[in-house]
Length: 401
Image (cartoon, rainbow, N blue to C red):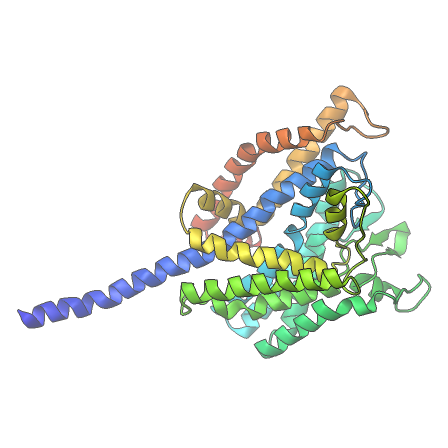
């Protein structure tokens, strides 16, 4: 009988171990999807602003002297989106590589990168701006595609080398800010792609607007890939969360220290006499195009802390809902742009151009009303597609969405 009990315990131990491993793995991966979903939902607020508030220009960085505080805060929150998404792309690439060969990972990154670049040029630019024009807008999806291809080229390097290169790029690229090439220079197009936000003339009367110069973002995807081992199922959740908390807090402390020095990493901040609020707005008005060192320290610091928080939350309706948005990010991205474009053209057809040559609303509070009204209608189709995507893994092209 004693042998029987011992045997039963021995037999149940691996089962229990596997169950715990599955739970840890589920929380670990759900936290990534939840963070991705969170920034997608925040992104919706900014895209609503770009739909209904086109008549109010938003400079880069936002002017602390004149910006509407509510718009400024929403734009500041939306600053999380691109850095977190690129960082998680690198992290997800590592998790993919942990289950596939180097060659398979490289092929996947190249194919996915080319797909994203083509999607940006041939579909998303038209959806985003709502017009057919000779301008090819090379925005965040294009940037992610380029970064994936660069990662594919570098993926055979040791992880510590990738981390070092990523950190050097993030910390040092602002030293390149004084370099400005004119359109006639032989390296102009390359430099405009890498670090100088500009317009590149193309054949047939086309032009390309390099909204997201890719060099700093390459640093971000490399660092995301480099911390991938923290998310292997063999790493204890408490250890991973401690690393994330230390890293996130460290980035935020570095941001505060460097920003207070006011000598490197972004345009200087300033004191607005008689307005502590606008002085604070100046402090957090950071450059996104291309992202400055301070922009990345702040946004990645907050993003990494949120990743730790979401993993600790593990369960609940909020985590599940966010993970739905994050589990089908490209579907949600395309779907919400289509919905916003249809709403805008419907408003133009009904009310005409109310703000100069565009339709717009006069009170920014209506942005939040629209935001609250659209969350559930956008969630339901995304949830349906996310379940379909999880159920039909045999359909290979679904992984691109």
